[in-house]
Length: 85
Image (cartoon, rainbow, N blue to C red; front, side, top):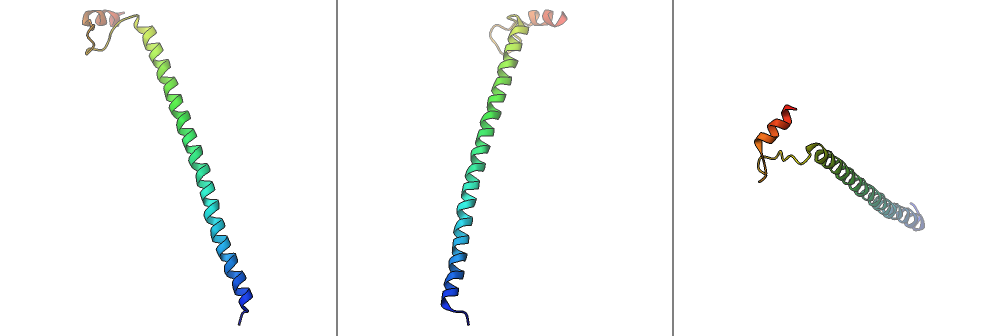
């Protein structure tokens, strides 16, 4: 038979290991979530910068020409003349 002190020591070590594992996993998960959120913000900022660049290029290239057929100032003849060039 094993003495009661050894059994107490065994179960204490087992419980300590389980608690340590749960706490350690929680800290790792928090770090992972923080990094994932930071990467998502950076990705959205990158998309926003690309959209701003595309909008600026589109505005420069248009020279005031409205190419959206649903817009109130749309002029089909002007658009066709621009595409001929």
